[in-house]
Image (tube, rainbow, N blue to C red; front, top):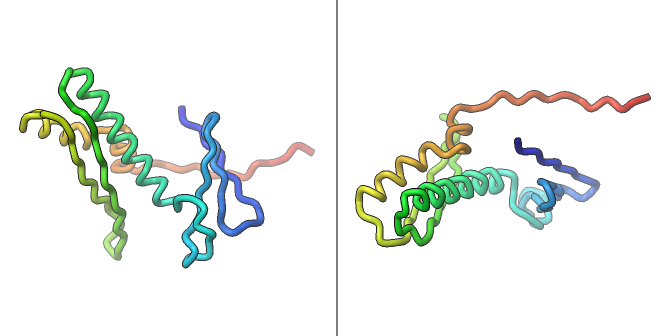
Length: 132
């Protein structure tokens, strides 16, 4: 399914991320020692959730032939001693009735990335062994 490669060189903390033919840079903000040349890792995580939310809602509305003109997804991550949570606020543009808006809100809770994040996932990590 999805495959991404992340590579860091000697510049703290700029990481080049390659996904298919697309390249982006992630970095930490200057107060954390980075050069602020790209979004921080948590920004990218929220960006993935926001993109999946907007895409899923657009697909659903198009299939239903609803007059959804645009979706804005505002996300913020909060971490404290009880754990982490994401606040997601949707702004739906278009002449939608209350039932359509309610249904799109329901659908936002069922997007693929939302479900993955809510369920958690196993991460297997291993070292690459070079051939001798």
